[in-house]
Image 1 (cartoon, one colour):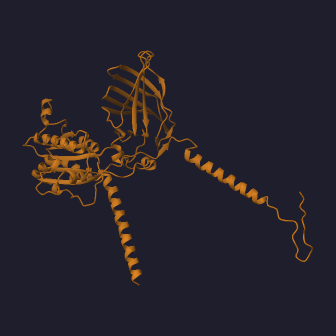
Image 2 (cartoon, rainbow, N blue to C red; image 1 turned 135 degrees about the vertical axis):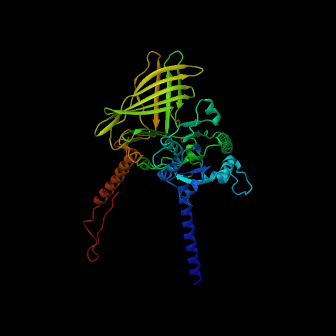
Image 3 (cartoon, rainbow, N blue to C red; image 1 turned 90 degrees about the vertical axis):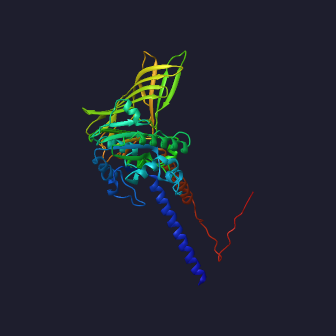
Amino acid sequence: MMLSSFKMVDTKMTVRMILSLFVVFLASRAAAEQVPTIMWSSQSYLHDLPPARAGHSLSPIDLQHDYLDTIIGKRPQLIVLFIQDKLSLDDFSQYGDVYDGNSNGGLFSNLKSSMDRAASSLVLSTELPASPGLHGNQVATYLQGRVDGSVIPVEHSLTEIRTDGKKLQLDKNTLILVRLPPAEGSIEESLKRNNDIIGSVIKSLPKELDFTILLTANRPSKVSVVLPSHDSLSSGRHLLGDFDAIDDSTYTFINATKDSSCAVYLYATDVSFLVAKLDESTPFEDTVNLTGLVPASQTVTCENGTVELALKYTNVGNLKNLDLVIPFDVTKRQWSLGNITLQYNYQSDQQTIRGSDKLVPKFTTTPRKMSYHCDKPNKFKELTTDKDNNTKGVITFQGLQVQPVDIENGAFSYANECVGFFTAPIWMGLLTTIILTLVLAFGVMMIMSLKTMDRFDDPKGKTITVTATD
């Protein structure tokens, strides 16, 4: 009896432990796809907004409609948006001395002092957008499209803006956009540098104007989840999974949207540009990594069955300028990628290369309601090279997914994969089936070749004797 009781207790403890680990696992996955959005204001209206519930996070739509629209509606005021590259709520616990009641905020000292002086404040946890992109950039885009005043980008302080001749509009909402520098060196050094910039900008705000300040990030810094599969990628789920791994190999996502009927999504895990000097005496070749870089400009045009995406990169290492034009031919049933045009200006200590090229893609056509996905696309065939300057430029993509038409719900449609009819898994299955079939056929033949004896020994009759001779 006592033994059975111990077994029951042991079983219950095991079940509870498994459930606890499962809950922790789910919580870690949820936290992995969230970034903090902190807001504080010189007015008290933030107290009237829905408070954050423990364990819950806001969707990007809820953040826009329930919070950002309210902030925009309070005019006139200054709206200051700080965008950090990576930030998680755990960073405040680890580097903010939150467990010390007499602390000044640790590496977030300027943030803490400003929030302490504010009339109202909120700390929210926001989910990453469903479409591949960066949360902070999408918040900035939303605010830029709705403020009735000017949008002022800031490097370090408002003093620089005033010297540039830009003035604040006191009768309208003015958005001050501060993109904090990405992490360099240790996390502590990066947070300290960003804390100094936040303090410098806040001290430069005019005392006579009301303000609302927001701090958010493009992606979380504390993550330990697995990247989604290609199926989830093509169905529009989050593309950002293992952000710790993305520290070493980031990604590129282009969201070029003109209106609801004219937009191009392009995602790639690796983008590189190869430039070469085709000189027999002094050949030269260099590769410039464009992965994770935001183009200096991106535009999309749609007319007469053609969608054209134009990207411009400037001052990327020795690559001073790169103009990339990607056309798409769209019909009623399908779309295809046209010839890509490149114009580039590369300057280094060894070479100065200026030229233009046309590249022919080897992509198959894709149905209109689908995106195109390929982990390792074939290299573009060089249609023409700059013969005058004897140069060559080639753009390459890895982990590419693109869709130039019929984008719905802000996400890629189901993907048309670039695999052929016989993929590696199909070959493995076929070979295994053939081998097992041959083994089975051999076994059946062996069984069918068995023959029974035509004579049997009768105990009542004469004994069968078999003479054996040498």
